[in-house]
Every structure is written in C-alpha cells, then in structure tokens.
Amino acid sequence: MASLKVKIKDLELKNPVMTASGTFGYGLEFADFVSLSDLGGIIVKGTTLEPREGNDYPRMAETPMGMLNCVGLQNKGVDHFCTCIYPQIEKLGTHVIVNVSGHSPENYAACAERIAALRAIPAIELNISCPNVSDGGMAFGVTCAGAASVVKAVRRVYPKTLIVKLSPNVTNIADIARACEAEGADSLSLINTLMGMAVDIERRKPLLSIRTGGLSGPAVKPVALRMVYDVAHAVNIPVVGLGGISNATDALEFMMCGATAIEIGTANFIDPAVTTKVVRGMDEWLDRHGVADIRDIIGAIR
Image (cartoon, rainbow, N blue to C red):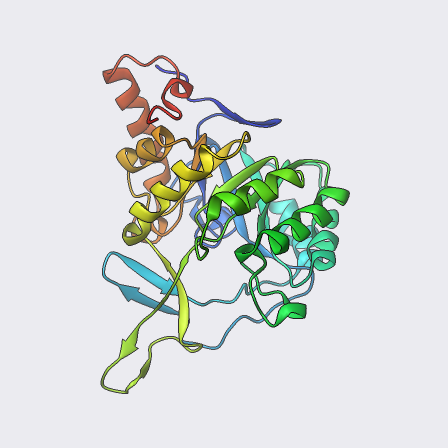
C-alpha cells in the first residue's frame, strides 16, 4: 500500500481526504455510514461567536450539476459548541477542525480564541467570505485588505494551525492568497462557493429566500482546479483543494494541480459514504501506477 500521509504545517493527516464545512454536520451524523477514523479530517459546520438563526426558507435549490444554498451560517454559537458539541467529538479518531465565521476582525478573533482553548481541536478554518458589516456588507475575502485584516486579528490570538478559506468571487485570487500568507496563514483552502441564482418561472420569483446563494458541486470543479493551480504557484504554504470533488479521480486532479489535501462537500449529500470511497480509490490508483507516496504527485502539473 502507498503512503497517504500528508502534512499541513504541524497538522499531520493520515490521508488527504477531509470533509467540507456545512456538508458533514459535526461528523456524528455520518457515523452510521462511514468509519470517521478513516478520514484525514472533519471540518465541522460554521461556528460564530454568537448564535445565528440563518436565513429564511427556502435556503437550498438544486441546479444542473450542483446546488445553491443560502443557509446563512445557522449555528448555536461558540459557547454551545464548546460545552455541548466538543465533548461528543473530541475522540472521533481523526482531526476535527472548526470553521470560524464572523462580522468583524475582532469578532472572528474572539471566536477563534475560544476554540484555541480546546485541546483536541488542532486547527481552524477561517471563512472570510462573510460580509464586513462596517464596510457596507462587502465580503472580507474579496479584497486583499479585508482578507488580511481578519487573518492578522486571528493570528494574534490563535497559536495552532490556521487555514484560511478563500472566496472565488474575486478578480485575482492569487493576490488575496499572498495577502493571507503575509499575515500568518499556515494554509489556504479553496474554493468557497460561487455566487449564483435560480428562478421559479411560474411564480416569477427567485427560488432562494434572499435571491442569491452559493453554487457548489461538480459544476464548479473546472473553476476550482484553475484557482487551486494559480494559488499553489503563488504561495509557499500548503493548499487544500475543494469544489466539485465526487470521486478519487477528481481528488487526484486537485492534488496534481498543487493541493496537499482535499475536502469533499456537496457529494456527501448524494452518497454519505463518498469520503471513504475516495480514500480507497486514491490508494488503488497509487498502487496501479507504482507511486509509493502520495506526496510525489502533489503539484505534478507544472
């Protein structure tokens, strides 16, 4: 068997397959379908400093080759996570990573600081696609200055592995990647969802309650691959690739484009066992091609 181990700064993964935030709950919801300890890591649903109700329904819409969502980061807040959720997931047998969201750099930092105190959580993933309330609602992640402000604030208080999740709704994602690296990001994950819309022609209204939502699934994969390639060649820190990964072939494509690890998202809704199938499929491909270590294919496409 080939070695599937990869490393993101101090975070050692038994294999490169992780779950994307918002698509795998807290991991416990999928325990009947997969052995959670077989995964490289689980990135749990978005967590904020205060509880959030999320957006009104309808919040999801199916599209050709994907889905739209505008859930709106519904969660019970970091205090609830620390006291009620954390005790249930601290011994899952794999790395549990918390996705952190906020509405100001200070708000992000306060949430991250609470999570830093949890011994069994080795890393966080910053969702910088959130709206900056002091800047008219523009997402932090769409400007270099906005992205850098969040990373800088969190880096001051968070000593563990810091992954920053990049928005694809930008002109030059490489510039924003470099800005995050300069402020202390240990890794970058991409892509977050692309903004999209769906329409009900009978009602003559948008299908989603707030008109637009994030597009995910196989439809976004070509865009994600290109952006992963661009970012991997722009920074000197590990990249985590996601966006439309449905099988081992997809995962290997991302790694050949420069990703050290990958996340599986929308495909979990279609096949709740897809993550472990991808792990096995990657291992089988490496064996068939005589590759002893999966790290040998990272960035194979120049």
